[in-house]
Length: 191
Image 1 (cartoon, helix red, strand yellow):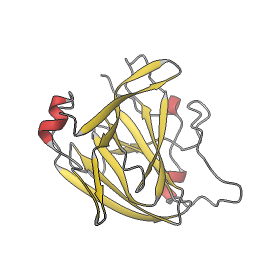
Image 2: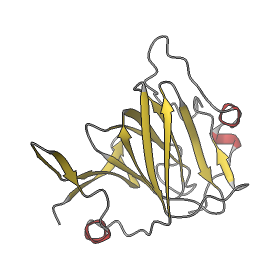
Image 3: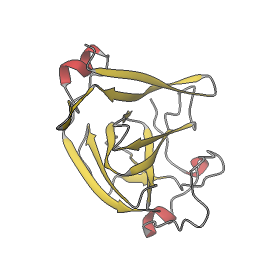
Image 4: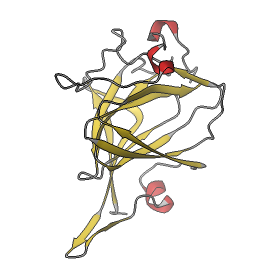
């Protein structure tokens, strides 16, 4: 092992089961850098045994807030990272029987820190773009299924996500993302 560092995410003294920060080893020299973004063997040695079936990439401008999304019948685990720029990435535990149900965790992902965030099935996910432009990539454990999507409103007071919204920052959201409901009004996973 040694090629990746995997850190379980904690909030308020509680480990949020299945949620991890993944940091690859980065090799730098006068030419630039090299890193393995994903190596199945290294992930399995670290206890992360998932199969990815779809890769997605988006490009967004500062102030874009995407989320908080999930799929109901076909939940997706996601390994996410910022290829360019900076984002504040958030996961919310929607597993009804989890000790951390309704708890959120956020991390800044950037092209500089090269951190990745693994969000398992049973979580809502979203991010806010902090830089002028951000390119964002995510590997998924299940395919996107139109008509199976759900979401939480980004500013649900029941969850209390502390988004780093700068003074004067105008949020740019899809119409769909503006209409999601609160935690108490939404779907939860029975695992």
